[in-house]
Every structure is written in structure tokens, then in C-alpha cells.
Amino acid sequence: MILRIRPQAANELRAAAAWYAKERLELRGQFLDAMDATLQRVLAAPSSFREDLDVPGVRTARLQRFPYRVVFLVKGDAVIVLAFAHARRRPG
Image (cartoon, rainbow, N blue to C red):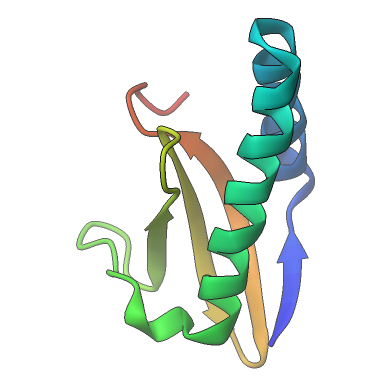
């Protein structure tokens, strides 16, 4: 599988990592490690993640330890990340 990250999602990831770095520098690395592990799980088996009932084709994967989700869809041989969403905030 090929990983593609939309620019807006990349901006969300950078902003979240910066916030964790501001809170405690080592949290940034831990957050990015957790995100990387989640992305690897998604790439290995994207169809194993729950599909959003309101938006067909869109799936989510939760990070361990951090309140974030990877929102993605699969097109052909690509996983397209639409958002790195905070799980406790409303979208937008």
C-alpha cells in the first residue's frame, strides 16, 4: 500500500506535534511514534478498521495513549489520510 497524506492533514499533524512539544518536549516524539505505529497498522490492513456509517468508504484508526484518530480512505493501492483528528474535539 502507498501512503498519501492530504496537505490539510499534514498541517494538522504538524500542529499537534508542536502542541505536544510545547507541553513537554519528549511528548512530541512519543506522539509521533504512536502516529507512525498507527499508520503502519493502517497500511498493513486498512480494511480491518471500522468504516464511518455516515461517510461510506471513510475509516478511522485510533492512536494508543493519545486522543487522536487517523481518518482515511482506500483508493486502489493507496491509503489516503484525510485528517489527523483530535478525538475529543468537534470537527472544524
